[in-house]
Image 1: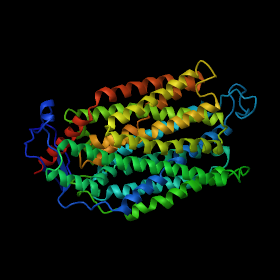
Image 2 (image 1 turned 30 degrees about the vertical axis):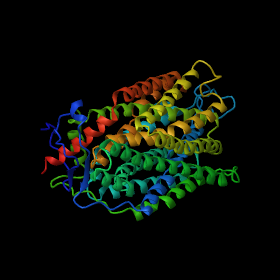
Image 3 (image 1 turned 135 degrees about the vertical axis):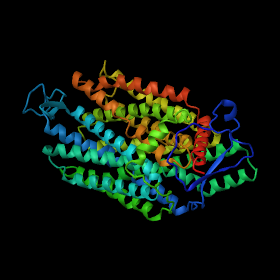
Image 4 (image 1 turned 90 degrees about the vertical axis):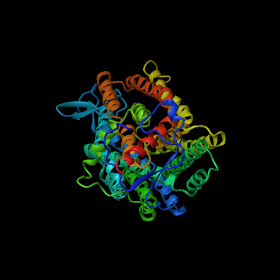
Length: 535
């Protein structure tokens, strides 16, 4: 029998063994892994079938929640106000960072001294990721119980909407500290919406009409376990890729809408604030339907004597103690933590360089964003078509995107030694946004599906909370290291070598250290054992 520690298990769930062979609980040898039965985790009463309007409301939320405001424009506004409020350390206090004779360096008051604006932006990111870490470890598991997850997603969504609307107050350079606060609030709540909304899709994928038909065919002996696993994986990829596609379509729609303000109101000093209001309203109009049309699928009641604010830590601690039973799941979580840290910090650093190059122009960032959004939309569909047509595994598709993740900081490193290449030229930022769109949009879709395949069924919120910790909240290391390097050298490009090493090491572990097939079967076996302990 398994020696895994007692676990706070959703008691309303039970496990059906859908194969005649007995399963040797806790034995994870390669020989036994090949004989693992497919297990179906279901509630005592079947969950509602996913309806067409429910699925479309899910896609519409993704369409609205495209990140243009909290990830793009808010950072640009914050960095722009801080730069306008700062001074050139070479020329001394009272000078302007925006003067034609400026050295290119810019500092603002910080504590008893000063910090470069780039460092302040990276510190804001580090603070955001630290808050997300506390949030995901504390309450992500609680979202598996009752209707807590449903209301949690609604709450963080409303907070994000409020933070974006509050940016109307950011109109003068002396409000750069308020801009930093609103950026952090918006970034944290936006990251939380991604995590808790992504945790919904494995449940949706298990309850689509196609998934139900697959299960029926398997139970009737019409398809083999291997075919069932492959087709179930493709169904998860279908929803993940289509939701990513809709997010990219929303990205395009939002940027095009923004041009209706940015072009005719180019000389209005508040045009950037108006654009943020427009972006946010787009999300509100499309996102609200999910909370109206979502089918009622409550989790089990919270165990007696437990509390929503403490159960998360207990479950995570119990899960961590079972890492030997879920080796590939935890190897993936750890390596993805480093990979996401590298990619997220690389994106922030490139954006800092891009904002400096284009003088914090919302209009130029909109054009660049459109190039990324259009290529992202095309690539998401293309990658999904290629995967579906040739039945390529999720991991192989993910590996392809990882190569470009590594090449981006490598290219930035060139900028240390020359200004001819390495994110110093206008054309490079166009190329970056196009290449990022082609490869990194599928990266997000496939990384999410990898997590869905390695998560024990029925524990989606808990493991997607850990995934969110690895993804959205991972960048506590990168920003702090990079801001220290930039502060010491005064050169943004000196941060790229560290990011290149970080991304390369993490990608290698995923490529050679994660077996998705074995990991999926380990996860199903582990979920079965946890439920068996309470019967």
